[in-house]
Image 1 (cartoon, helix red, strand yellow):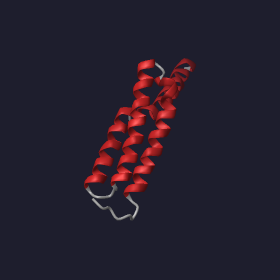
Image 2 (cartoon, one colour):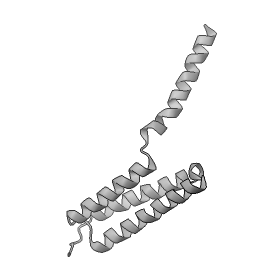
Image 3 (tube, one colour):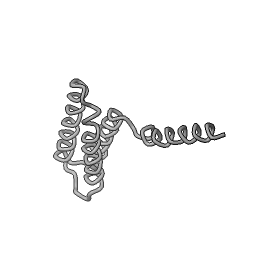
Image 4 (cartoon, helix red, strand yellow):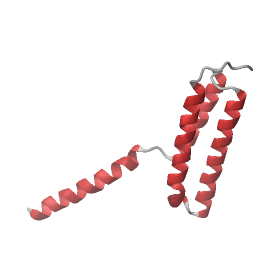
Length: 105
C-alpha cells in the first residue's frame, strides 16, 4: 500500500512539473507568431513604417540570438533570456498596434 501511494505521488509530481513546459509554445513558434502579427499590423495600417521596422529589427535580433545559442549548444542556458525578450517584443507589438497614431503610407 505504501509503495502504491509513493508511486502515485511521484507520478503526480512529475506530471505537475511537466505541465507548464507542455503548455508553453516553442521559441520558433513565438517568433513566427510575432512575425505574422507584425505583417498583419502593416497590412491593416495599425503599424507605421517606423514602428514596423523597429519591431522587425527586434525580432531579427532575437532570431539571431536563438540561432547562435542553438549553434553553440547554449540554448538551455539562454532560453529564459530569449523568452523574456520575446515577451517584451510581444508587449511592444500590442502597444504599437493599439495606439491611436495616424498611419501615413
